[in-house]
Length: 344
Image (tube, rainbow, N blue to C red; front, side):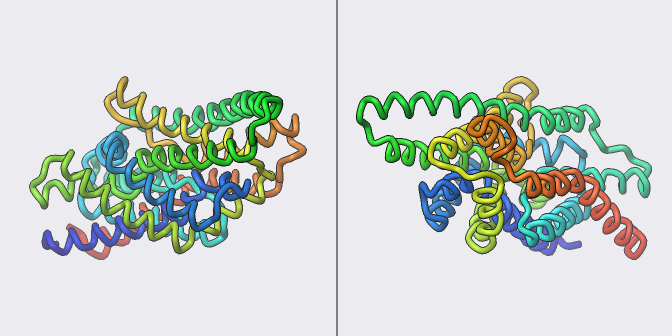
């Protein structure tokens, strides 16, 4: 394949999966603010798109390297394209149903599928199990941290609300602004972590073709991915925002502020702290963190599970469990077809 043709295909793939990210993941930072009526759906999407782009450009490189060179290394151009399109297809199908899917699970599953393809057809084991184990551990730990943090913040904010009420302050106005500020921080954290899902697999290919250092390449990819995320948020984002914002549990300003801040802190921490200790950020599921945060405040407010829509939560859990194997099988299947039809 010619270099220009590869770059065109890579750009299309990045925009496609980034569009899927915006369509599904715009709900993560915005759903609680919209669900508690702190901000309109349109304004929430504008704020999300802006700060997600800032996060992607400032800190996106921390997790990009994990996806692009950590899980499976190296990923050739064909493998990168197969992984991106496979993950994108899975995300599109689940988003069409209005369910929140882990885009991180989708791309990691698709990359692992390509890694299995390398083993089957090339006899090469390019899967870095050490990184895979750490990523899986972060997937288990992060929802628990998000839920615990949400419960803790709800207790703190509830007491703050009582204090402000006694002092005669406009409590609703205070928490409304706090919630909107938390939305911006959460969107920034999202951009820093999840931009890698759309762009990480293309670091090696793009850097090789353009002749640019990895860091410069990652900034270019972050910009392209940010455009795609914004397009997805504005076109299909409302579908999942409504599911998380209205159908899991009813939210007010206090529960909304606690849930959004919990999500933001969790996602930012897993992007930043592992980079300091391991040299690469952890691609956690921002969807898991968001839904777990909403569940946490629902449990705290209602002192149990009675305030949660368990049927909706059940469907969400099923979609989570199926994501990695579905994406892996999709990418392995496509890679197999390509190898059989176009052996090289």
